[in-house]
Length: 148
Ligand SMILES: [Zn+2]
Image (cartoon, rainbow, N blue to C red; front, side, top):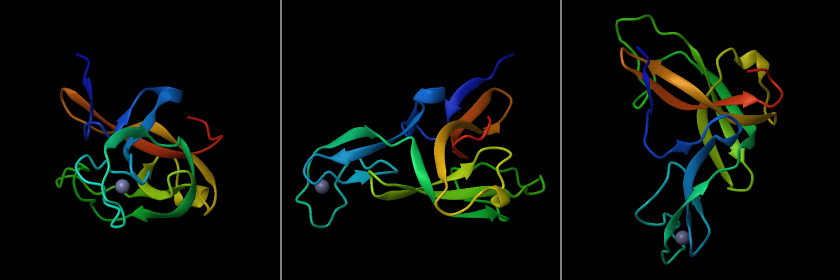
């Protein structure tokens, strides 16, 4: 039986392989970009409010900070409290064009020793969790040039 691939959060990312992109929204009035996406009101306090349109984010950014998670992360991360916690690597990535920092887990096999501030990373499709019927998909950050 094959599992259904389902995004762990709807409409936060799209595409496959090289076409994989995070989805934010952009305000038509002030051009501010939001991720997680903001679909109701522009959050720029200096903006009178504009229409919010879906906007794919840059695929690549620079490592702004990183750490390894030694505690269980909050929702929407899924973890089974019955299982021992496995540390994972979390990266904060600065997207220059959008002027924002986006958090995400590092791709499997990428550890804090592999990272440094300012390193270029790219967003890639990832798997957060699998259960009986579903592969829950998410995004990962991976150093540019690293093998899959
Ligand atoms: Zn705005």
